[in-house]
Length: 319
Image (cartoon, rainbow, N blue to C red; front, side, top):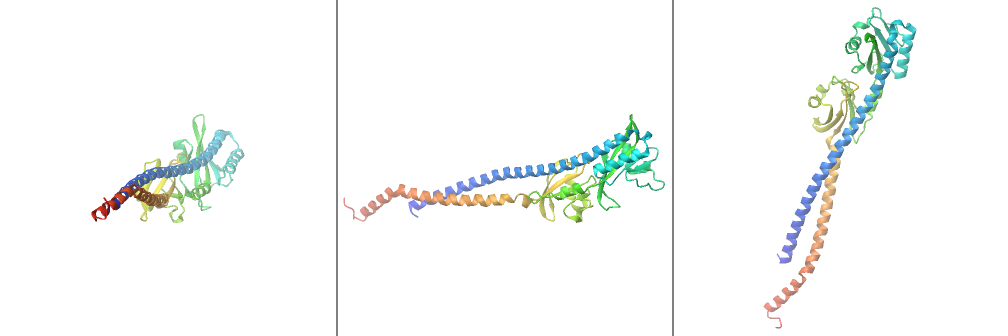
């Protein structure tokens, strides 16, 4: 190998090594920043979903609480006035029906539907919950026997001078929240909604609805336990996934979340790797080409000298 060829080979190897190191460092830095941006976007999307649910629930809770305040004089009110308040509450909040139960065992509905014979609200679970907490609250989702829809009941105590008089409960469908969750389409991700018992309320795969998360994915259920917000990596059917979530405070612990395949969420990294490799190859070829031209120019005097030496050694030179 000639001296010139050795120089070119050495410089080419050094340039290749330098560009490779530069490309690797650039990839690591880009990956770090890009992953951080993706995760931040995921968390922002999950927080937006949770905030939407909280605002919706808070509005319904506020309406039921307002009705309970209007009913603080229920002991002296006419039945027609009580039912008018219940009917207006149902209409305003978009519920199925609003019911009031009192400490004397009386119960009314805004729709006017007569109570079954022997009905006593005081032995009902919802009434006991209101009386025990004496706070506005919301139940977990359940299937309404009449409409076969997922609904929740929003409850508020009726108080007068610190004394508990009874409770108001509004039954309302979750269609709006289910649609908002199902409409999530964030870069290929999908939304899910899980209640405090770990039951799926909303999921794009209808087979999961009504099922316990622990039975669907025990790994994810364990990782979610005790956490209020964050990003969690898990596997499902052999695929790596990532879930972004934030606990809903207004519901008492529901989990609105957005799930992604990691391959989809970080697909941009593969594109960046290809781009970096292409740029590196082009830079290497251009650099080697430029170096060849420069070295040829720099070593031209040596080529001339080499020619003179060869002539002298063959005794063809004129001294």
